[in-house]
Structures are given as structure tokens and as C-alpha cells.
Amino acid sequence: MMKDSVDTILLQWLQARPDLDCSSMGVVGRVRRTSEQWKKNMERVFKLHQLSSIEFDILATLRRSQTALTPTELYQTLMLSSGVMSTRIESLVQRGLLQRLASEEDRRSCRVELTEEGITLIDLVVVEHIQNMESMLSPLNHKERDQLAELLRKLSQ
Image (cartoon, rainbow, N blue to C red):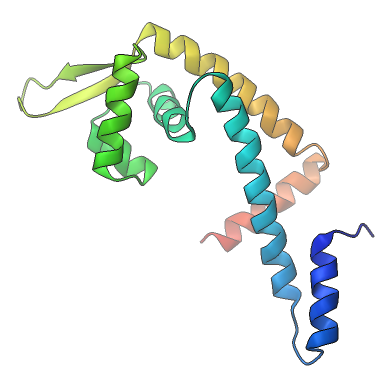
């Protein structure tokens, strides 16, 4: 069995408090450490293209939706505040990656969509993102990936 730094922490707790079952600490600690490392790995890819993870999420959401969305639809999908969304949309519009479409029904409202430049960029970045995630998951075979996905699905409900 492979040992990691969490095993050392668990051993220390076993010695300090043998009356406690700290096995949950091992699971949660490993998930947190893995999450933090994966976040850094993913942000590295986004930064190569001058994108933050939020900007990637906005572009990716619009790309997979294949339609223009309102800022409200975007911030609800991405669980961001409206202020953060407005700032990011403005930045992406200024960079030529998004364009605003005025609403014909409500002059106060608009929808945003990817420009051709935005589509080209997100199509490139999403390929690199998938390759990066494949690398991050490379220690697992397909059966293990499926098991992990199912376990995480169960925990997130």
C-alpha cells in the first residue's frame, strides 16, 4: 500500500488520541489536497491563454449551451454574484471574446454570446483542459475512474 502525508497525520492522531476513529479525516484530507492540486493544474492551463477559471467557465458555458444567454442565466449556472459576472463579461467583451445582444423585448436586458474569436479560443482551451484532466486522472484505470465518479456523485447529493 502506498503511503502519503495524510497517513503520517493519521498515525499521529492515533498516537495522540487512540480513542478517536480519524478515518474520515483521511478521506476528507485527501479529497481536499487533491482538489487544491487539481485547481492549480487547471488554472495553469487557463493562464496560458490569459483566462481566469471564472472566465473559462463563462466561455465554456456559452460554448456548450450553443446559444446566447443572459448574464442572469450565466451567474445562476456558475453560482457567481451578479457583480462578478458583470465585471467578467465586460472584460471578455473588451477582449473581443463575447458580444452583447440587445433584447428586443426589454431595453434594459441583453444576452451575451461568443464571438468567432471566443469560439476559436474556447475550442482550443477546452482541448488542452481535457488533456490536462486526463493527465491528472492517469493513475486511475477506466473502472477506477467510474467508481470514483460514482462515489463522488453519491457524496455530492
